[in-house]
Image (cartoon, rainbow, N blue to C red; front, side, top):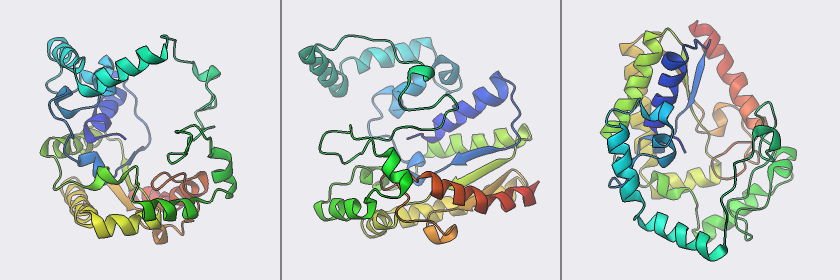
Length: 273
């Protein structure tokens, strides 16, 4: 769900605030990271979680305690917040601390995932499909075929927009330049799309045009800043001999596909060093 400004702020915090110098920075970059904001009137179209994190918000050009505070005040009266607030009041939900990593049922202590909730579950995002997807027994192709027939895609709106947002494209440019200036190699992976959903994107959205534009933009950065980044387009499974059943939903690949992607990009990275 990260947008270009999220990626830039995280990299800026890692490389400058913390002074880290990783041997390689990997960026998974989909075209929707550059889509225009759905509601620019709230937080200027940026994510709440970004501006609610001071260590990251400080790297957003316009963000300061006054501007962020004003955005939060306006957000209190937004439709989303009012609906959420009234729902919580009706349900009698009480404020509770967020569980620590040791208490989490989503992640192991080493950060590996333990849970993935089914986006299309009739029970409402509660079914944990992590184990069957990893085992290859989850009927993802059957499910997505049904979703296509019902035209009930959860992710489709992310791709249905006319053109890249200039501000977000600028944050992406600054991210590339930041890594180049700090001499940190940047590997940009254009992530895979499950083939059933890819057919829908190609038929019903500007995704093919946007993907071509993003590929061209990245090639321009490679030419402008030699050695700054390596690009690996893994959109189609043929690029890494991917498994069409190795997905949690239409976009998120299972471990076996991630392993194949990393195996395919390793020679590209080693050749660039």
